[in-house]
Length: 402
Image (cartoon, rainbow, N blue to C red; front, side):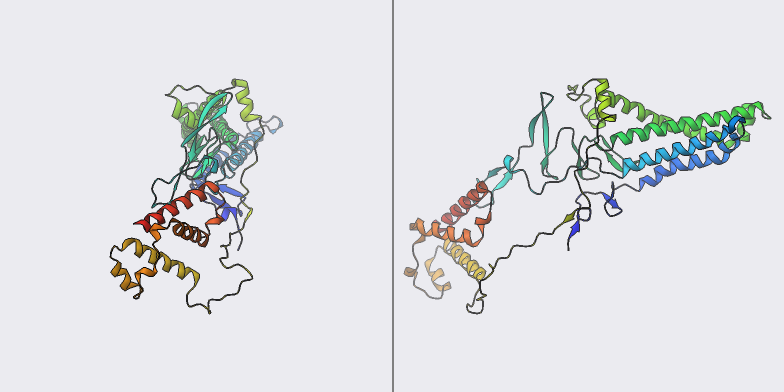
């Protein structure tokens, strides 16, 4: 039965709505993040904002405080959803290693040739060579600024970091929304803090002339002010830090890893161009269609169509004959006592067996026949096929000569 890409996905992501939404493996942390946003806003609307509705009688301007609060909160939640539920820039895994960069080591005759890859290669970025690494998990050379996230188990383009608060990697396709989410959260904290301070001032101007009496009258305002002050150090600090990264065209990963190396930033194109690249460039479409149909590969049919099944005419099948030949050839190569082999083969005369060690053509014909029986001719890659044929031939010649 055909399955969809998200059903056979090899990463650690979680999917909702039949592959339309993609999250990281720690998506449950979103509930904590949403609670940290919604609960303080609800407390503010119930215990503070409703008391400010009639403090500005002209044009009922007090209702604007409540409307701005709700609108700003919805804006933050929408940005959180866009950041956490879409493809951050995952590079699809390759089905096989890159053949153009493969070298085969067949120095050991009795072992299968092993594929070897250069761990790094150089690509040009703005006229400067940049080293890119080979990813064993995704079987590809990572593009510049790409890194493999150990949490999501994916290679992410322009990888910035994995944010546990949004439960998703931050990469090329959702970095813009992440920055807007953090900066909007900072703005919401400042707004709530300012409105709570304003309400305390109105209380002091009325029946509660001292700060202490006003704070005792509205403890919710005090709690919200403390909460917003602490939160500002977090989201406000992130906003300032990422503003610096955007202006210098860096990622969090590059800043923490290469800061001590004092490397030349080949991606820096000037402050204004760097800002335009993040906020004004078109977001590339996803490389993955998570709802696409994946057809399961059928195993190859070893019996050609049109040929009759003559298994009843022969006592043993072809596979059994091949296995028997392998066993007999192995016995010939391992037995140094001709009499032992004479007894095991049912009393046949040793002279009836050809001297295989002295006739290379016999070994060559046998090797060619065995390679055809093992369907080696189906290997499309000629270097791989030639290497395997050479190793197979040398192995059997060595056994026959032994």
